[in-house]
Image 1 (tube, rainbow, N blue to C red):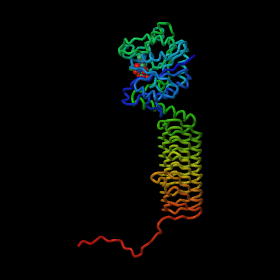
Image 2: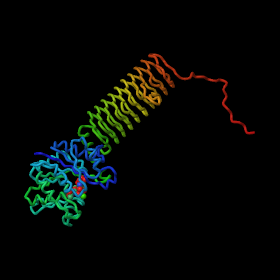
Image 3: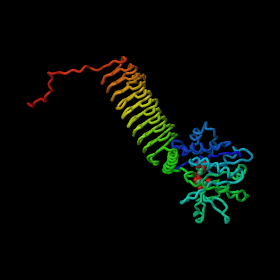
Image 4: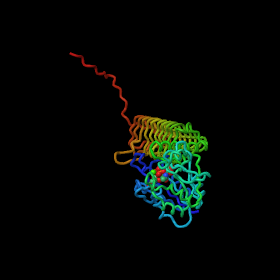
Length: 457
Ligand code: UD1
Ligand code: CA
């Protein structure tokens, strides 16, 4: 069976009230269309065609290099007219055409594959669902023997037909040669003056081609996005799916309703995640990790047994096993924390490596620094890595103790086991093992008197 996937994505999406084409709005961090393209790719179709129209330039730029072909539909005269545009791009001979929608992102691969199998180059297979409120949708009209007779669009339906709750989801699989023939025979003789793809159902029935209605149990799979509200509702449903998958794998989420993944999150055993955390990009979490409330974690690797305290921001960082980070810490790209490192509140780390057991527990900045094992970096101390034009490195060797409120002016090296006195500004190398003090000597003035307020005359 040669499978051809057609993704309809020419519609305007007026209700989004956005300049961005609807199918490029993001769900779970990825454009709606990307979700559908991923499903199509999983089906290993012979080819995938995307029908573009509104915002075609942007949509086509997005799909470029994704191994699919775009076909423009200008103007947009209905779903049947859309499929007419792809006819010249479909080969001769047998095959199955699976029609998906760019704005129906959560169709499961298994559901789409089952629909294509139901068609099997011969039958017209429709994906349907029963809705409590079917208004707006095309209704599945069945005959006396319960067989599908056709689809009637809401605007063309009689009051009796409008009472039908079984609707067409917009997803179907059709035999290739018959589909071509049917769509070329469509007319726009209806309430909307559109070429309705759904009119091919009656044509199939008239030709004696079997028409199958395949129901879908989980309506999340067939919900479309037409408005910001629907996008947000679908986002919650997607996040619920992702949360359940994490919990099935053993992750303990404090609340599956307050959990967001916009990318891929993989977790080891015994991971606990408190409420309000957002994971973006690719995040790998080791075993026994605990992540506190309201952390934002993007493109990161977190080692076994690490604890991320609440309100911590991590991006492009690697956190070693047993490390403690936060609360209110910020790890920026290139932060590499060794095992058992402690990064405390209001500490920012950027493009710096910290050796095993190094600590910066309060109010500090480490940028472009190489920090050795067991270093203690005092409260309020910073690496001055930027001279106004270029960035320079600070090297702090093993077992260094940097007191509070120090400025290490890069490029500079602090030797093994050195101690830097609090309040020092260090602009030259500090020798290993010694105490280096770089601040004004303390002075007391015994004769000093506080100024008095001048007496009024
Ligand atoms: C269509 C179906 C309806 C079904 C509903 C499910 C038809 C005539 N009706 O309704 O039975 O219940 O979907 O959501 O097919 N599109 C194009 N070009 C066009 C028109 C639409 O590419 O000229 C695309 C849209 O971008 C969208 C999809 O086709 O991805 C469906 O269009 P939409 O207008 O949302 O559906 P309806 O026609 O209202
Ligand atoms: Ca329409």
